[in-house]
Each structure stands twice: as C-alpha cells, then as structure tokens.
Image (cartoon, rainbow, N blue to C red; front, side, top):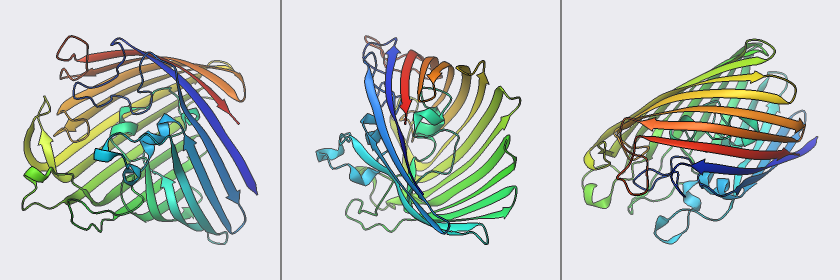
Length: 361
C-alpha cells in the first residue's frame, strides 16, 4: 500500500533582542526557528511510504529553511563553506526487507536518528521550538544499514552501521582520505501502548575539524560516543510525561574556554537532560511544559564552555484535525554571558515568544 502525507509549518519568533536569536560568536541558539521578529515558512514536508508484506520503503523530502538545517554536511557547496541555502533536502530515503515469520527487518539508505524524543517534523512534538538536546546533543540523520527484530512482545532491538552523524558520503579532510564509520545499537521496551523506554548508543570515528594551524602531527579524526536514553508514559488519558538524557564525547578537537577562546586539543564532553509534560485539556486545547539543562564541557557543540538551560511553556489549539496553532514562551539562560544583545558584550539570558501554524495532510 502506498501512503502519501506531509505538513506545512509557518512560524514567528519574537526576541527581546531585535533581529537575532544568536550567541555572541554568531552561532544561532535555535537551529530551526532562528529568524527573529519576522514570520517565516519553516518547511513543507512531503512523505511517501510503501508498505507491503515483505518489503517497504520511505521517501521524505523537505523544502524550506529547515531543510538547510538538517541537510548532510557534504551537500554544502557554497564557497568557503558558508551556510547552506539550497532550501531542500531528501530527509529519508530507504528500502526495507521484512521477515514476517521472525518479526525481523533490514533497511538500507538514509534514516532519521534513533535517539531522543523530538522529531524533524514539528507536528510530532509538544512544543514549537526544538530542545537544546535535539539541536546540539544528537544527530538528525544517518546513512547506512539498519537491522532490527522483535525479541519478544515487549522488546525491540536495532543494530546499524552508518557513515556517521549527518553524512551521506565519506570525503577527504585536509587532503587526507577518510574511511569513517559509526556503529549504532538500540533497545526499546514497550510493555504497553502507554509506556516506552529506549536506550541507544552511537560509537565511531568522526572528523575532528582541527584547524590546519593546530593539526600538525595530530589525527584528523577522533572517536565520538553518544549514549542516549528516553522514557515516555501516559499517566492518565489527559497527561503524558517524558524525559531524556544524553552523554557524549569527541576526541581530538579544539577545546575552548568560557569566552570561546581555544585552550587545548583534547576530548570534549557534552551532556544534558530534558523533562516534558503535556496535558490535553479538551479535544482542541493542550498545554506543554519543557525544562532542560545542557553542559558543553570544552565548548565543542556551542562554541563556549557553558551550562545552558531553558524553560518553555506552550499552548496548542487544534480547531480541526489537519490544522493546529501554537503560542509559546521560552526562557534560555547560561552561566556565561553568551547571548547576543545590541550594545553589550553579551547577557546570560534570552527571552522569546513564538507562534506557529501547522497544516497536516
């Protein structure tokens, strides 16, 4: 059976700083809703799914600014490696062979990442803005081979071998050929439709992106490890609670201090946790809360050695099944003055208001 679906997403983010939701180093604090004080078509998402007894496949294509955020590194062809601005991306493209007798399957192609609780499609999340963990702690997609099977009625197991975080091919780095791979493994425990707990791990070599002036005699890649666990449960018919924790390291990278200045080359560490609560007040109204803490030890993910947190409250109104609207308040805070503000060197907080309209089809 062939199924076609998708969504269109329009968003608006109001920042207390005119025109920016950035760090002082120019990096965005938001990877998706990253244009302040101006409405923006975030994306149009088209999904085609083929489902047959012994085989299947998925082809997902995204159009709009969000596509440039999640696109693989190798598709950036701008001179000097500037921000990608193609405006489209093949987000998933894979074929699956299924074994109904054993409950097993094997897929080949490009897939979304196993870890975490949030999704590339906004309609599948509780909040308008994405979490820190979704943007800075884990990959968006991987390309390779995945093998999964049902251990029993409550446990699923997934193993994979991929080309690494957000990559679709292996390229050279500083003139040296690369042959990097990432192994992934995941276990999902689902004793009922109301509860899910999963544990995932990604381990493999990734490009270390050491500047040429610092790379003499050093390896051009290093082992990256990611350990992720997430749990979600329906407490009552109206209340859903969820949580996520990530811990990751990357070897052979430039470490920076609290103001973003390089200090050494070594192992970077980042970790964080997120908690979610969603309450369905009526068939049309729902509210969601999210709180996070993220520690970027060595500054590899954000450009600053910092402790970064956020608190978000979202109200959702769904007047009809294909349309829903969201209003959101979010506060970001750091132990360092990393948030850009006109006329100052930086502040330790960032307040934003968000509005979103999503149409599913």
